[in-house]
Image 1: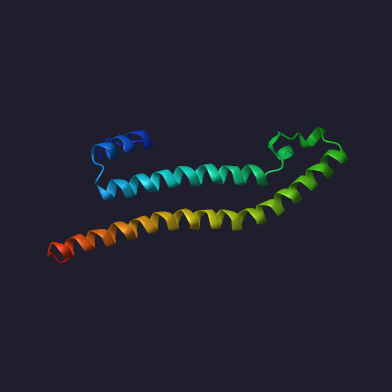
Image 2: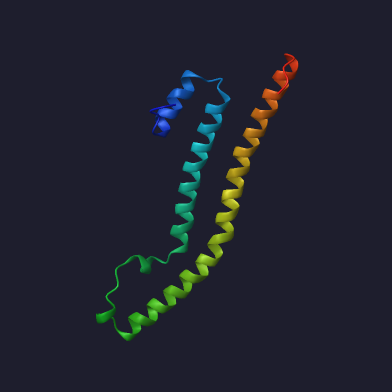
Length: 120
């Protein structure tokens, strides 16, 4: 595993050692991490009003510009409050996938040890 610095290298090592359960678990966690990042970015993109992503020159802004900014900030605040439950659910679902795989791997290893008469 030394020298493995990215997902492609990890997948290559996994191809070399396809029966290594630790590698499978690490690869799964890595894939889930990539999926979480992408899903989080989508949620953040939905939460941020498009007008807030532009630079704002408060000194030259008119009263109506400032009122529009205030509305956008209120929308962003509301969207941020709505973002948290979705993000929490996303993280929990992805963590559950990895945990399920880890439990399966651990149970399988215990079963094999029992069949071969090893205590573990």
